[in-house]
Amino acid sequence: MLRELRVRNFAVVEEATLEFGPGLSVLSGETGAGKSLLVEALALLVGGRPSQDMIRAGAGAARIEGRFEIEDVDGVRTLCEDAGVDHEDGWLILCRELRREGRHRAWVNGSPATAGRLREFGGRLLDLHGQHDHQRLLDRAWQRRILDAHGRHEGLGARTAAAYEALGAIEARLEDTRRAAREGRERADYLRFKRDEIAGAGLEPNEDEALESEARRLSHSEELVELSGSLHHGLYEAEGSIVDRLGEFAARLEALVSIDRDASPFRDLLEAALRNVEELGRSLAPYRDSIEHDPRRLDEIRVRQDLLYRLKRKYGGTVEDVIRAGEEARRELETVQGADDEIERLEAARQAASAELAELASELSERRRQSARALCEAVTAALPELGLRGGRFEIALDAYGEIRATGAERVEFLVSLNPGFPPAPLRRVASGGEMSRLMLALETALIEVDDLPVLVFDEIDAGIGGEVAHRVAARLVRLSATHQVLVVTHLAQIAARADAHYSVGKVTEAEGVRTSVRVLTGGERVHEVARMLGGDPASRASRAHAEELLAGRL
Image (cartoon, rainbow, N blue to C red; front, side):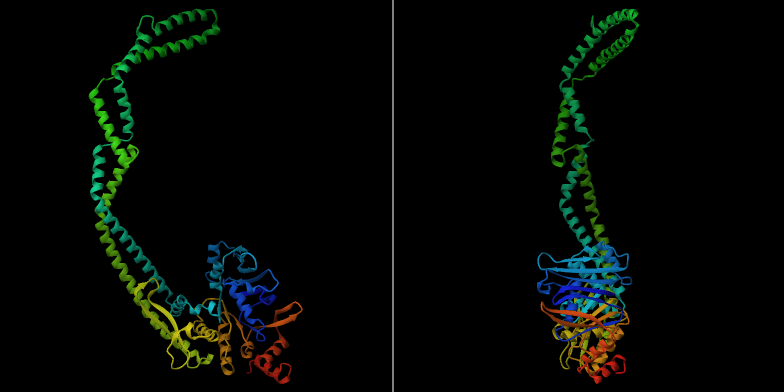
């Protein structure tokens, strides 16, 4: 529910604050006073397109702010959560600022927002009727949704959309599988060769490093034997070897320790050195004996290394990369070989999903036809009492030729407002006032299913009066039992039935003209209704007429 609207420096409105309650609220005033400006302000607040001439002359910026109570409004809390907007207190404040210089700005509960974000929130809070730019009545998608809501088959529509998406997913996977199989078959010989070549090589991880180490030993075998033998002889075997010399040094150190006990740690160090040199000398002999001089083995290693080099150049930088490439080729071949089974399975799934979609779409089409007949009868029956005598409302259900996410047919609202003329799309035949009254007929027909909380009507009373005005007022009152309804009107019959009445007027000052808005009560309201009736609001007869209208006796 819209609780408060604040407008500053908007067109000729210098500053205005309107507080709204539930039920029916009307705005009245002399022609040209600026009544529709407040509707335009609301349109901007919910994402309408701004222009520089909307900013009051002499002001640098215009600002519009609306405070909505959202405790019971479906979908708004989810929008808040998606946008990261705090909503815990149950209020939503939309704000729009138009700037003469720089970018226009917008906020939702104090958080910066785009015009698109305002439209998202506005689409769940408020609907404007009377100006073509802000009428969901002209939107075919909304027409389809409202028909489905009237027939209470939104659930069937959602299932149809889900079935369409499921079929699309299966078809996409089927196409991917067919393409992969087709490409796989073209690559099968290559993949088979690659798999067999790598598998036949019998590669081991890090094999190239091990081969390189073995090849280095074999190619330097004579040098290794000579070096290790020389070291063994000099350290351990020769007369006067390092081991013998260290033994002599050990005897001298014993003499030193016998004189100076503090030198005993030197003895431990020398004993450790002697043991290590003895171990080194002994170990060099078997190492020398283990070295092979095997030119044939070296040739085998060179051949193996050449194979590894070629495989690494073809399939990867390391032996591990080559092994992985062989495994990938094996898996891809298995996929190709199993593709026919997968294609067959997906074909069966596609046929089942297609049949389910066709069944759901057929049921949806039939229920739409039934709902369309009922809705057309209800709206057409309401048109005469709304001043559209001879009008006829129809809903066209045109088959697409293929089933879509929204069903098998396009939904479009048609109307004929003159006998003898065929129904045509609403935009082509209806004026602003007629469109508002059409929307009023629809809203009252949909009163139990339309959950939009705030409805704003402008131009709804264009070209009507007398008994039709009373009937339009009655419809608005009925609608205001379940919605908050705001109406810009020049008809006393509508104004008299309102729960709240606001007067919009011009004030001429030295600085220029400005628009003022005030709430009417008591005698002020009687005076305004008398003016709207066309008489002299100061005369006793006009006031009596107005009082009778306000009392509901007319």
